[in-house]
Amino acid sequence: MAYFVWDSALETGCEALDSQHKRLFDLANGIELAIEQHPEDSEAAANAVSGLIDHVVEHFQNEEAIIAEYQYPDAERHKALHVQLGAETMTIAARCMSRSSWRRLSAIGCTTTFEFRT
Ligand SMILES: [Fe+2]
Figure 1 (cartoon, rainbow, N blue to C red):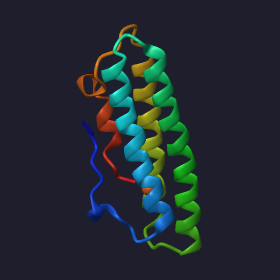
Figure 2 (cartoon, rainbow, N blue to C red):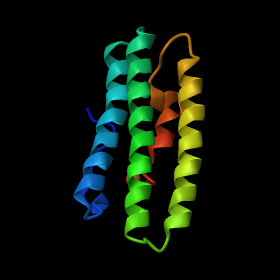
Figure 3 (cartoon, rainbow, N blue to C red):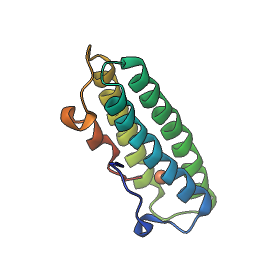
Figure 4 (cartoon, rainbow, N blue to C red):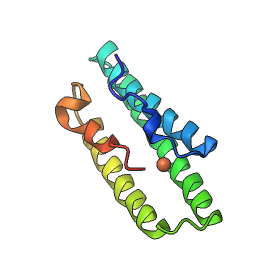
């Protein structure tokens, strides 16, 4: 079961950004799936977390470039949100990866990171 379900209300109208946002959902769901399917395999979950972090970093760079290109009026606030969300993501990922045994991320607060404020 998908924990994060894409909603067309989240579409920006920019195909590239919408595609990246959908990928974020897929990767976040992949973490849940890795833990669900391999509860004692920390490597599977760590790989899923790592994949999400990589995509988050790449996506933020892409989105900020597009925002700048189109002179989005709320660009600075959006960029600040990215900084905040990136820091939260890294903090929670580090906490998740330090666990010796894996539990569902929702149980330890990881999923709150991925409230899509992007
Ligand atoms: Fe975004």
